[in-house]
Amino acid sequence: MNVNTSRILRAALIGAVVGSIANMLVWVIALQVGLTLSVPAMDPSMADASGLMQVPFIAVILATAITTFIGGGVLALLNRISATPYRLFQIIAIVFVAVSMVGVLGAPANGDKIVLGIMHIIAGAVAIWAFTTMTTQAKG
Image (cartoon, rainbow, N blue to C red; front, side, top):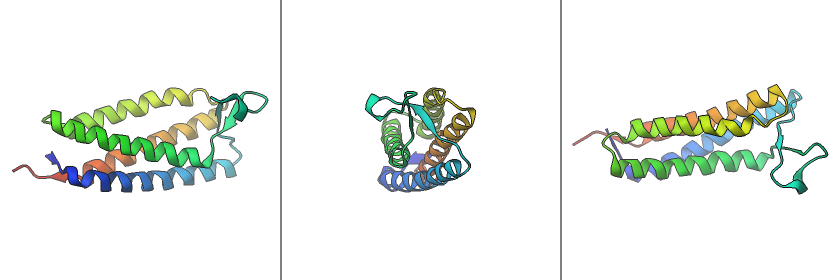
């Protein structure tokens, strides 16, 4: 299968919106059940007394959307340099999600780690789904 590159931007937009909505639902539910979704603060001015900060609403949306659009760029590049762009894209996306989990390990509570990990998996899975289902075209 070849990638229809004219559909990548649309797939990225849909993937970013669906992934962001799904992650926002997880974020809201997690806070409602009492999780803090705190991570070590990169900026000391945003940290509480223990050096942590709650993952803000906007960060969830931006992280999901930005990484999805970057994924679209990766797929477009792979389409130019590979005979199997979807296969390579899926491998790279899975590795990216796995590597991104390193940041989750800094969360202080196990519940926070689990929920933040789930959010990373949601973003990756939705992006893979969007790009592989919305950009395919038959060879020929």
